[in-house]
Image (cartoon, rainbow, N blue to C red):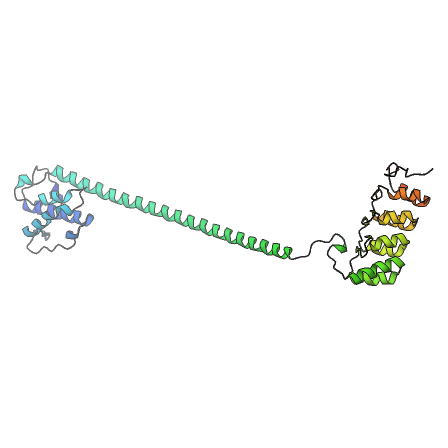
Amino acid sequence: MPPEALRAKPRYSDKLDTFSLGVVMVQIITRCFPTPTDAEIVVEDETTPTGEKILPVPELQRRQRDIGKVPPDHGLLPTALHCLKDRPRERPSAAQLCQSLGQLKTAEAYTASQAEDQGRRLEAEIARLQEQMKQLATEKDRLASQKQREIAELRSQLQTSHKPPVQQGREATTVSSPKDEKALYGAADRGDVSAVRRLLASNVNINCTPYPHGWTPLMTASFGGHVEIVRLLVEAKAQLNIQGKEDGVTALHLAAQEGKADVVRLLTEAGAQLDIQKTEGATPVFIASQEGQSEVVNILLRNGAGVDRASNVSQSSVTA
């Protein structure tokens, strides 16, 4: 702005001062706060003595009509246009011009501050969105990993469900023909060790009960005192405490009854139940004492058979 624009006079009387100040004010305002009508202004009629272009009267009138398009918060363009009035007393004073320029500076600073605040808000929003994207990516990876684990677990469960049940002894899942079962029973009954071995190798049901009385191969081998066959069947995980269908007798009952001390010892060491009762309540030691099998009685007592386990037939398990 020319220095003479801020002289201490209450009003400007010099045309150069008036037009210089008006042109400068209009240029500053339109540069800082452009409107569609401020974009292209061509001044052709007059210039100031210093070479500055001035607005012709038609252009001033047009600009006055467009004042309403200047941002309403400032109101600086009318003040600048008033500098161009012909009557000195209608022109703004130096104090008013200084106030207007102060408002312009404040408005410009406020606009810059707004832009800076908006920039910071945009940066914060961008950072927030980036953080959300990271969280979404992490959640996506977690869900993908969880999905893979669940698929693996389902596959494992399906594979497990198609496996045969865990065997509790070989007989749990063994399926064999009645012919092979009768052959194994017969071989155990007559003491044919080689036949028993061959049939066991063919995966025959080791706990089969091919006859109505419900005896197993182990029971008939124990009854006959075939120690080697009993050992083969025990090693093949034959069940020791299966009871016959007619009287509830077990392999240990039969060996004790017949006085087969070696078989009793083998069954006892293998974990046969010592105090198991027949249907009428007799235990192996009771039957052995009844039959006078003193050696068997001593074996059973040494291994923990109950001496006071009574029988339903009301006889003592121990003889004098």
